Length: 413
Image (cartoon, rainbow, N blue to C red; front, side, top):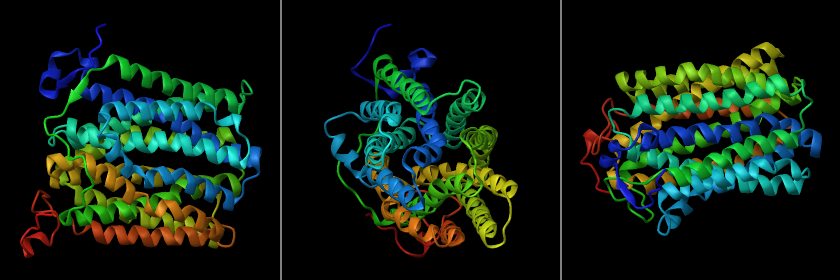
Protein backbone atom coordinates (compact mmCIF):
# COMPACT_ATOMS: atom_id res chain seq x y z
CA UNK A 1 0.00 0.00 0.00
CA UNK A 2 1.37 3.41 -1.00
CA UNK A 3 0.86 6.13 1.58
CA UNK A 4 0.01 9.59 0.28
CA UNK A 5 0.40 12.67 2.47
CA UNK A 6 0.25 15.41 -0.19
CA UNK A 7 -3.23 16.92 -0.63
CA UNK A 8 -5.58 15.15 -3.04
CA UNK A 9 -8.48 17.07 -4.54
CA UNK A 10 -11.91 15.67 -3.76
CA UNK A 11 -12.82 15.49 -7.44
CA UNK A 12 -9.78 13.23 -7.97
CA UNK A 13 -10.67 10.91 -5.10
CA UNK A 14 -12.96 8.90 -7.35
CA UNK A 15 -9.87 7.25 -8.86
CA UNK A 16 -9.03 5.67 -5.50
CA UNK A 17 -10.27 2.26 -4.36
CA UNK A 18 -13.67 2.59 -2.68
CA UNK A 19 -12.29 1.95 0.80
CA UNK A 20 -9.80 4.87 0.52
CA UNK A 21 -12.26 7.55 -0.56
CA UNK A 22 -13.32 10.51 1.65
CA UNK A 23 -16.78 9.20 2.55
CA UNK A 24 -15.24 5.81 3.39
CA UNK A 25 -12.91 7.54 5.85
CA UNK A 26 -15.93 9.24 7.42
CA UNK A 27 -17.58 5.83 7.83
CA UNK A 28 -14.46 4.26 9.38
CA UNK A 29 -14.17 7.09 11.92
CA UNK A 30 -17.93 7.01 12.54
CA UNK A 31 -17.59 3.32 13.43
CA UNK A 32 -14.45 3.70 15.58
CA UNK A 33 -15.52 6.59 17.80
CA UNK A 34 -18.60 4.99 19.44
CA UNK A 35 -16.69 1.85 20.43
CA UNK A 36 -14.71 3.89 22.97
CA UNK A 37 -17.32 6.49 23.82
CA UNK A 38 -20.30 4.13 24.06
CA UNK A 39 -18.39 1.71 26.29
CA UNK A 40 -17.26 4.58 28.51
CA UNK A 41 -20.87 5.75 28.78
CA UNK A 42 -22.27 2.29 29.48
CA UNK A 43 -19.87 1.62 32.36
CA UNK A 44 -19.63 5.16 33.70
CA UNK A 45 -22.50 5.33 36.19
CA UNK A 46 -21.77 1.94 37.76
CA UNK A 47 -18.02 2.59 37.76
CA UNK A 48 -18.18 5.97 39.50
CA UNK A 49 -20.72 4.78 42.07
CA UNK A 50 -18.73 1.62 42.91
CA UNK A 51 -15.21 3.06 42.64
CA UNK A 52 -15.70 6.56 44.05
CA UNK A 53 -19.15 6.64 45.70
CA UNK A 54 -20.56 9.31 43.40
CA UNK A 55 -23.93 10.95 44.11
CA UNK A 56 -25.90 13.34 41.90
CA UNK A 57 -23.58 16.18 42.97
CA UNK A 58 -20.37 14.44 41.85
CA UNK A 59 -21.89 13.13 38.61
CA UNK A 60 -23.00 16.67 37.83
CA UNK A 61 -19.47 17.98 38.35
CA UNK A 62 -18.01 15.16 36.26
CA UNK A 63 -20.19 16.08 33.31
CA UNK A 64 -19.42 19.77 33.77
CA UNK A 65 -15.71 18.92 33.52
CA UNK A 66 -16.43 16.68 30.54
CA UNK A 67 -18.12 19.52 28.68
CA UNK A 68 -15.43 22.17 29.22
CA UNK A 69 -13.49 21.05 26.08
CA UNK A 70 -16.72 21.33 24.12
CA UNK A 71 -17.04 24.91 25.28
CA UNK A 72 -13.43 25.45 24.15
CA UNK A 73 -13.99 23.81 20.76
CA UNK A 74 -13.47 27.26 19.27
CA UNK A 75 -9.76 26.46 19.73
CA UNK A 76 -10.06 24.30 16.62
CA UNK A 77 -9.87 27.52 14.59
CA UNK A 78 -6.40 28.19 16.01
CA UNK A 79 -5.23 24.60 15.55
CA UNK A 80 -6.18 24.41 11.87
CA UNK A 81 -3.80 27.28 11.23
CA UNK A 82 -1.00 24.75 11.83
CA UNK A 83 -2.67 21.38 11.21
CA UNK A 84 -4.99 20.08 8.53
CA UNK A 85 -8.55 19.44 9.69
CA UNK A 86 -8.35 15.80 8.68
CA UNK A 87 -5.17 15.24 10.73
CA UNK A 88 -6.63 17.06 13.73
CA UNK A 89 -9.74 14.90 13.61
CA UNK A 90 -7.78 11.65 13.51
CA UNK A 91 -5.37 12.72 16.27
CA UNK A 92 -8.35 13.73 18.44
CA UNK A 93 -9.88 10.30 17.85
CA UNK A 94 -6.57 8.73 18.93
CA UNK A 95 -6.61 10.75 22.17
CA UNK A 96 -10.19 9.67 22.90
CA UNK A 97 -9.23 6.01 22.49
CA UNK A 98 -6.07 6.25 24.58
CA UNK A 99 -7.74 8.13 27.45
CA UNK A 100 -10.69 5.72 27.51
CA UNK A 101 -8.29 2.76 27.65
CA UNK A 102 -6.77 3.90 30.97
CA UNK A 103 -9.95 5.17 32.66
CA UNK A 104 -10.09 2.40 35.27
CA UNK A 105 -6.53 3.17 36.40
CA UNK A 106 -7.79 6.29 38.24
CA UNK A 107 -10.63 5.18 40.60
CA UNK A 108 -10.95 8.41 42.59
CA UNK A 109 -12.77 11.71 42.17
CA UNK A 110 -9.64 13.58 41.09
CA UNK A 111 -8.42 10.79 38.83
CA UNK A 112 -11.78 10.30 37.16
CA UNK A 113 -12.15 14.03 36.53
CA UNK A 114 -8.64 14.24 35.03
CA UNK A 115 -8.95 11.31 32.66
CA UNK A 116 -12.46 12.44 31.73
CA UNK A 117 -11.05 15.82 30.74
CA UNK A 118 -8.48 14.17 28.44
CA UNK A 119 -10.96 11.85 26.76
CA UNK A 120 -13.36 14.76 26.40
CA UNK A 121 -10.77 16.87 24.58
CA UNK A 122 -10.39 14.03 22.10
CA UNK A 123 -14.13 13.52 21.73
CA UNK A 124 -15.14 17.15 21.32
CA UNK A 125 -12.34 18.16 18.98
CA UNK A 126 -13.00 15.05 16.89
CA UNK A 127 -16.71 15.84 16.73
CA UNK A 128 -16.08 19.48 15.79
CA UNK A 129 -13.76 18.58 12.92
CA UNK A 130 -15.87 15.60 11.88
CA UNK A 131 -18.98 17.75 11.46
CA UNK A 132 -16.99 20.21 9.38
CA UNK A 133 -15.53 17.49 7.14
CA UNK A 134 -18.94 15.89 6.64
CA UNK A 135 -20.44 19.13 5.36
CA UNK A 136 -17.42 19.85 3.14
CA UNK A 137 -17.02 16.35 1.68
CA UNK A 138 -20.67 15.34 1.16
CA UNK A 139 -22.74 16.97 -1.60
CA UNK A 140 -25.83 18.89 -0.43
CA UNK A 141 -28.23 16.69 -2.36
CA UNK A 142 -26.80 13.56 -0.72
CA UNK A 143 -26.17 14.96 2.76
CA UNK A 144 -29.39 13.91 4.60
CA UNK A 145 -29.22 10.31 3.38
CA UNK A 146 -25.45 10.00 3.88
CA UNK A 147 -25.57 11.54 7.36
CA UNK A 148 -28.34 9.11 8.22
CA UNK A 149 -26.18 6.18 7.13
CA UNK A 150 -23.18 7.57 9.04
CA UNK A 151 -25.34 7.72 12.15
CA UNK A 152 -26.45 4.14 11.49
CA UNK A 153 -22.79 3.07 11.21
CA UNK A 154 -22.05 4.64 14.57
CA UNK A 155 -25.09 2.91 16.03
CA UNK A 156 -23.87 -0.41 14.65
CA UNK A 157 -20.50 0.08 16.34
CA UNK A 158 -22.12 0.93 19.66
CA UNK A 159 -24.48 -2.00 19.21
CA UNK A 160 -21.52 -4.33 18.77
CA UNK A 161 -19.80 -2.95 21.86
CA UNK A 162 -22.96 -3.16 23.97
CA UNK A 163 -23.83 -6.61 22.69
CA UNK A 164 -20.43 -7.92 23.69
CA UNK A 165 -20.81 -6.31 27.12
CA UNK A 166 -24.24 -7.84 27.71
CA UNK A 167 -23.06 -11.31 26.70
CA UNK A 168 -19.65 -11.32 28.40
CA UNK A 169 -19.85 -9.04 31.46
CA UNK A 170 -21.22 -11.62 33.89
CA UNK A 171 -20.35 -14.73 31.88
CA UNK A 172 -16.62 -14.02 32.08
CA UNK A 173 -16.72 -11.78 35.17
CA UNK A 174 -15.06 -8.95 33.27
CA UNK A 175 -13.40 -6.05 35.04
CA UNK A 176 -13.81 -2.36 34.31
CA UNK A 177 -10.09 -2.23 33.49
CA UNK A 178 -10.27 -4.96 30.83
CA UNK A 179 -13.30 -3.50 29.08
CA UNK A 180 -11.92 0.04 29.03
CA UNK A 181 -8.55 -1.18 27.72
CA UNK A 182 -10.15 -3.26 24.97
CA UNK A 183 -12.60 -0.62 23.74
CA UNK A 184 -10.28 2.36 24.00
CA UNK A 185 -7.42 0.39 22.48
CA UNK A 186 -9.56 -0.56 19.48
CA UNK A 187 -10.45 3.07 18.78
CA UNK A 188 -6.81 4.16 19.12
CA UNK A 189 -5.62 1.48 16.67
CA UNK A 190 -8.27 2.43 14.11
CA UNK A 191 -7.26 6.10 14.46
CA UNK A 192 -3.65 5.20 13.68
CA UNK A 193 -4.85 3.25 10.64
CA UNK A 194 -6.82 6.29 9.42
CA UNK A 195 -3.77 8.49 9.87
CA UNK A 196 -1.53 6.21 7.79
CA UNK A 197 -3.83 4.64 5.19
CA UNK A 198 -5.73 7.62 3.77
CA UNK A 199 -4.57 10.54 1.58
CA UNK A 200 -5.00 14.12 2.76
CA UNK A 201 -8.15 15.23 0.97
CA UNK A 202 -8.43 18.82 -0.26
CA UNK A 203 -11.94 20.29 -0.13
CA UNK A 204 -12.85 22.56 -3.07
CA UNK A 205 -13.59 25.61 -0.92
CA UNK A 206 -10.78 27.02 1.29
CA UNK A 207 -11.98 27.53 4.85
CA UNK A 208 -11.89 30.81 6.74
CA UNK A 209 -9.32 30.35 9.53
CA UNK A 210 -10.52 33.00 11.94
CA UNK A 211 -13.41 33.50 14.32
CA UNK A 212 -16.59 34.50 12.52
CA UNK A 213 -20.06 35.29 13.84
CA UNK A 214 -22.59 36.17 11.15
CA UNK A 215 -25.90 37.80 11.98
CA UNK A 216 -27.71 35.77 9.36
CA UNK A 217 -26.81 32.54 11.23
CA UNK A 218 -28.54 33.71 14.42
CA UNK A 219 -31.27 31.05 14.33
CA UNK A 220 -28.71 28.29 13.86
CA UNK A 221 -26.76 29.60 16.86
CA UNK A 222 -29.88 29.67 19.06
CA UNK A 223 -30.91 26.16 18.03
CA UNK A 224 -27.40 24.93 18.83
CA UNK A 225 -27.53 26.55 22.28
CA UNK A 226 -30.88 24.99 23.14
CA UNK A 227 -29.78 21.62 21.76
CA UNK A 228 -26.74 21.60 24.03
CA UNK A 229 -28.68 22.60 27.12
CA UNK A 230 -31.40 20.02 26.50
CA UNK A 231 -28.94 17.24 25.65
CA UNK A 232 -27.15 17.64 28.97
CA UNK A 233 -30.21 16.65 30.95
CA UNK A 234 -30.66 13.48 28.91
CA UNK A 235 -26.97 12.56 28.85
CA UNK A 236 -26.31 13.21 32.54
CA UNK A 237 -29.49 12.32 34.38
CA UNK A 238 -31.58 9.90 32.32
CA UNK A 239 -29.09 7.01 32.56
CA UNK A 240 -28.10 8.01 36.12
CA UNK A 241 -31.78 7.67 37.08
CA UNK A 242 -31.83 4.08 35.83
CA UNK A 243 -28.95 3.17 38.16
CA UNK A 244 -29.79 5.32 41.19
CA UNK A 245 -33.58 4.91 41.30
CA UNK A 246 -34.10 1.49 39.75
CA UNK A 247 -30.80 -0.23 40.63
CA UNK A 248 -29.77 -1.19 37.10
CA UNK A 249 -26.53 -3.19 36.88
CA UNK A 250 -23.90 -2.83 34.14
CA UNK A 251 -25.38 -5.51 31.90
CA UNK A 252 -28.89 -4.05 32.30
CA UNK A 253 -27.79 -0.50 31.47
CA UNK A 254 -25.86 -1.88 28.52
CA UNK A 255 -28.88 -3.85 27.31
CA UNK A 256 -30.89 -0.63 27.37
CA UNK A 257 -28.20 1.13 25.33
CA UNK A 258 -28.16 -1.83 22.93
CA UNK A 259 -31.88 -1.44 22.29
CA UNK A 260 -31.30 2.27 21.65
CA UNK A 261 -28.78 1.62 18.94
CA UNK A 262 -30.78 -1.17 17.32
CA UNK A 263 -33.61 1.32 16.99
CA UNK A 264 -31.28 4.01 15.63
CA UNK A 265 -29.77 1.67 13.03
CA UNK A 266 -33.23 1.31 11.53
CA UNK A 267 -34.50 4.81 12.33
CA UNK A 268 -31.62 7.07 11.20
CA UNK A 269 -31.50 6.12 7.48
CA UNK A 270 -35.31 6.47 7.30
CA UNK A 271 -35.08 9.90 8.90
CA UNK A 272 -32.38 10.83 6.40
CA UNK A 273 -34.79 10.07 3.57
CA UNK A 274 -37.58 11.96 5.35
CA UNK A 275 -35.44 15.07 5.82
CA UNK A 276 -34.37 14.92 2.16
CA UNK A 277 -38.03 14.78 1.09
CA UNK A 278 -39.82 17.00 3.59
CA UNK A 279 -37.10 19.37 4.80
CA UNK A 280 -35.47 20.28 8.10
CA UNK A 281 -38.33 22.21 9.70
CA UNK A 282 -40.85 19.32 9.86
CA UNK A 283 -38.13 16.96 11.14
CA UNK A 284 -37.04 19.30 13.92
CA UNK A 285 -40.62 20.19 14.90
CA UNK A 286 -41.39 16.47 15.16
CA UNK A 287 -38.28 15.92 17.30
CA UNK A 288 -38.95 18.76 19.73
CA UNK A 289 -42.66 18.00 20.11
CA UNK A 290 -41.79 14.40 20.92
CA UNK A 291 -39.15 15.44 23.43
CA UNK A 292 -41.64 17.65 25.27
CA UNK A 293 -43.85 14.61 25.82
CA UNK A 294 -40.92 12.40 26.83
CA UNK A 295 -39.53 14.84 29.41
CA UNK A 296 -42.97 15.46 30.92
CA UNK A 297 -43.36 11.70 31.27
CA UNK A 298 -39.93 11.49 32.94
CA UNK A 299 -41.25 13.97 35.50
CA UNK A 300 -44.25 11.71 36.04
CA UNK A 301 -41.92 8.90 37.08
CA UNK A 302 -40.99 10.92 40.16
CA UNK A 303 -44.16 12.89 40.86
CA UNK A 304 -46.62 10.07 40.07
CA UNK A 305 -44.48 7.04 40.89
CA UNK A 306 -44.53 5.49 37.41
CA UNK A 307 -42.36 2.40 37.11
CA UNK A 308 -39.21 1.01 35.56
CA UNK A 309 -40.78 -0.31 32.34
CA UNK A 310 -42.03 3.14 31.40
CA UNK A 311 -38.68 4.69 32.35
CA UNK A 312 -36.79 2.27 30.10
CA UNK A 313 -39.26 2.79 27.24
CA UNK A 314 -38.95 6.56 27.52
CA UNK A 315 -35.16 6.28 27.49
CA UNK A 316 -35.26 4.46 24.14
CA UNK A 317 -37.79 6.89 22.63
CA UNK A 318 -35.76 9.83 23.91
CA UNK A 319 -32.63 8.53 22.22
CA UNK A 320 -34.48 7.99 18.94
CA UNK A 321 -35.68 11.60 18.86
CA UNK A 322 -32.13 12.84 19.34
CA UNK A 323 -31.19 10.92 16.17
CA UNK A 324 -32.90 13.68 14.21
CA UNK A 325 -30.21 16.16 15.25
CA UNK A 326 -28.48 15.81 11.88
CA UNK A 327 -31.32 17.91 10.39
CA UNK A 328 -29.70 20.87 12.14
CA UNK A 329 -26.45 20.11 10.26
CA UNK A 330 -28.13 20.01 6.87
CA UNK A 331 -30.01 23.24 7.67
CA UNK A 332 -26.69 24.98 8.22
CA UNK A 333 -25.15 23.38 5.13
CA UNK A 334 -27.93 24.95 3.05
CA UNK A 335 -27.59 28.48 4.44
CA UNK A 336 -23.79 28.67 4.84
CA UNK A 337 -21.15 30.19 2.65
CA UNK A 338 -18.91 27.23 1.67
CA UNK A 339 -15.84 28.77 3.32
CA UNK A 340 -17.68 29.29 6.62
CA UNK A 341 -18.18 25.61 7.44
CA UNK A 342 -15.02 24.92 9.47
CA UNK A 343 -14.97 28.09 11.62
CA UNK A 344 -18.73 27.98 12.17
CA UNK A 345 -18.57 24.31 13.19
CA UNK A 346 -16.13 25.35 15.94
CA UNK A 347 -18.23 28.35 16.97
CA UNK A 348 -21.43 26.29 16.94
CA UNK A 349 -19.85 23.56 19.05
CA UNK A 350 -18.79 26.17 21.60
CA UNK A 351 -22.29 27.69 21.63
CA UNK A 352 -23.73 24.19 21.97
CA UNK A 353 -21.64 23.70 25.13
CA UNK A 354 -22.20 27.04 26.88
CA UNK A 355 -24.94 25.57 29.05
CA UNK A 356 -22.99 22.33 29.40
CA UNK A 357 -20.31 24.05 31.46
CA UNK A 358 -22.63 25.04 34.30
CA UNK A 359 -25.89 23.13 33.82
CA UNK A 360 -24.85 19.61 34.96
CA UNK A 361 -23.28 20.87 38.18
CA UNK A 362 -26.19 23.22 38.94
CA UNK A 363 -28.81 20.60 38.18
CA UNK A 364 -26.89 18.07 40.27
CA UNK A 365 -27.93 20.09 43.33
CA UNK A 366 -31.54 20.29 42.08
CA UNK A 367 -31.47 16.54 41.47
CA UNK A 368 -30.83 15.67 45.11
CA UNK A 369 -33.94 17.65 46.14
CA UNK A 370 -36.29 17.35 43.13
CA UNK A 371 -35.30 14.92 40.34
CA UNK A 372 -38.64 15.45 38.60
CA UNK A 373 -37.96 19.19 38.45
CA UNK A 374 -34.89 18.52 36.31
CA UNK A 375 -37.03 16.84 33.65
CA UNK A 376 -39.73 19.52 33.77
CA UNK A 377 -37.00 22.07 33.04
CA UNK A 378 -35.93 19.94 30.06
CA UNK A 379 -39.51 19.96 28.75
CA UNK A 380 -39.46 23.76 28.85
CA UNK A 381 -36.21 23.75 26.87
CA UNK A 382 -37.72 21.43 24.25
CA UNK A 383 -40.72 23.77 23.94
CA UNK A 384 -38.39 26.71 23.34
CA UNK A 385 -36.59 24.70 20.65
CA UNK A 386 -39.95 23.91 19.02
CA UNK A 387 -40.76 27.62 18.72
CA UNK A 388 -37.33 28.28 17.17
CA UNK A 389 -37.72 25.40 14.69
CA UNK A 390 -40.92 26.98 13.37
CA UNK A 391 -38.76 29.91 12.19
CA UNK A 392 -36.87 27.71 9.69
CA UNK A 393 -38.12 28.32 6.12
CA UNK A 394 -39.33 25.49 3.91
CA UNK A 395 -36.39 25.94 1.55
CA UNK A 396 -33.45 27.44 3.50
CA UNK A 397 -30.64 29.00 1.47
CA UNK A 398 -28.18 31.91 1.70
CA UNK A 399 -30.39 34.97 2.04
CA UNK A 400 -33.35 32.83 3.16
CA UNK A 401 -32.10 31.63 6.54
CA UNK A 402 -35.32 32.23 8.49
CA UNK A 403 -39.01 32.85 7.79
CA UNK A 404 -38.31 36.53 8.55
CA UNK A 405 -35.70 36.88 5.80
CA UNK A 406 -38.29 37.77 3.17
CA UNK A 407 -39.54 40.65 5.35
CA UNK A 408 -36.21 42.50 5.33
CA UNK A 409 -33.10 42.70 3.14
CA UNK A 410 -30.61 39.95 3.94
CA UNK A 411 -27.66 41.04 6.01
CA UNK A 412 -24.22 40.34 4.67
CA UNK A 413 -22.81 39.49 8.07
